[in-house]
Length: 264
Length: 249
Image 1 (cartoon, helix red, strand yellow):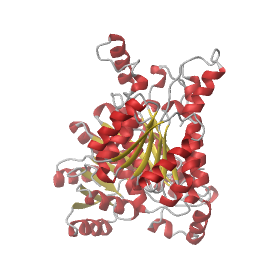
Image 2: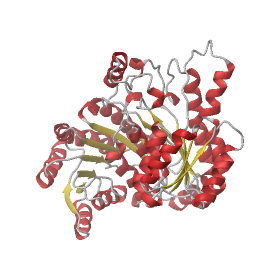
Image 3: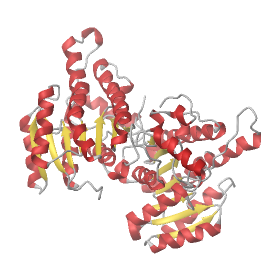
Image 4: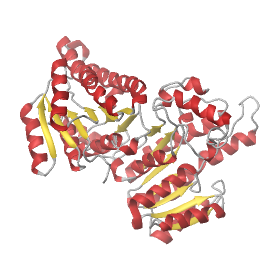
């Protein structure tokens, strides 16, 4: 499995690369991408220790030409490409009434456009391998989530972008799908509920757990499982879906955690 | 593929044919113990025999899923054979296609009863076993037809109803460690679909209009069912996973 993972230094991206290394062993050929070279150094070493062949590349996915560079790197190092995991993302808070243009644009520049650029650059290689694209969205792609107005909109854009790619590139043999995690223990949530010694975090976590049908927050590995399923041969007739990995939260009590109404 | 389903007990209703039979075989290949429940005893026996011939563990149970006593007898048979039930695949279903002006009450009732009442009755008797062990997986076989197919007001209603059932049961049973999900297949190459009078046209249309340009296979659907039934889908519940090759509307 020759795979590019963006946002691979932490959270769901790291869990996906790690799970791929564990599952595919020395046939895992992983190009891990994130902003910081330092963080990637440890990740690459750890993945190699698990038997994977690893390339690491620090890049800002907002920069032009980065997508092409990543695909070229995968081809030169691994001889091709089987899957692109477009996972890098940022969260931004702010009410739409007062949000600035730059903040709004940044959300779409990081959360949505790179998936299109990566897909476009990878299309030839993925057609050759009959490969797959899996992008990380969010349950906020389905339900408005105050105060995440621009984040929710960017994740909804991500989902439709991927469904559009599925439609256009299906005839090339390329499958394109999303996963939509609910609250998951990642860097993005570190300020909200990761700290077991912080009473506010604990209260926040308990409130969320009570609202989730499975009564627990998600682990990055549980989202990674869904990503690898969609990237692999078990999903060979699945394209254009948005697989929700949220313990049932989005069909339950979004209002209880500050969400609005919505449909999926 | 190790899905950690070894020694798990799985009931597959409508397990004698098509998607059900393929799913039963795939569970067995993962080392699961399989109960093949079907209204047609002969086909259920055939699938169970072939699984045992391959070294797997399986029993066949004749059941009409619209009958409460029958559903209870099915669960009892599973417990008698294998001790408990971990996975229930509500797959039994049928079509009685015709435009509404020609659809008889019997056409409506049998489709709604087998698909919807059947899922209710089978879940009702199996969920207590799952609650007791605080682990369970219910996978309901819906259909892309939940979005509406002409000539299938009965079938579309039943398959849409199954999604509401899936979500309600997911909400009820999450705290017991039971996940409940639906798989919505598109056009799958099975006996049921091959029997349609315009099958050749369906194939030609799929190759032309589906993004992935082919009919689905029973194995494609089984892949999705096995994933949802496995530990790998531990945080997925109340979901509807489409296996359609890219067709939705």
